[in-house]
Image (tube, rainbow, N blue to C red; front, side, top):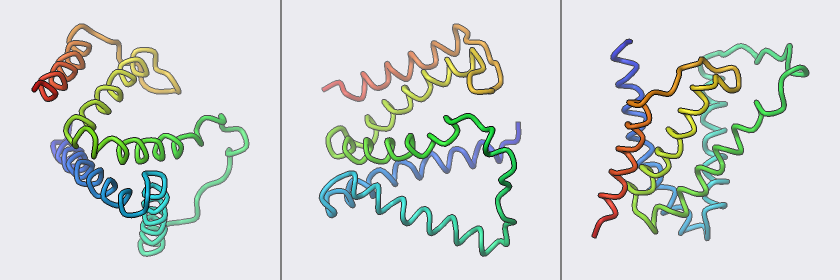
Length: 147
């Protein structure tokens, strides 16, 4: 595995911690997490389209779209849910507890998706160590909340 890929993933994860604070502040300014999400998606769409134009990306391939399963289009709903929920929870729980709890949810679902190869994914069977990793993260959340 290329270590640069791991560093890119680590750096991207670090930006999420900053993003949720920015979004929480924006939500307070705009009057709620839904308006913050709408603003962030507007900025994101502008950035992605600008990047596509600046890097001379070819037009998207549209062959096969008609035969694609309906659920491939729902990723945006999940993204919007993440933005709205993390914007709502961050001022109430703090960045660390909010993100670590979201991550435990992600990893729990990921274990199931991997184990069964759902949605055309690669099958990676659940094991004691993989489940224990998620359990340890859950224990970490408990420690962070301990007063």
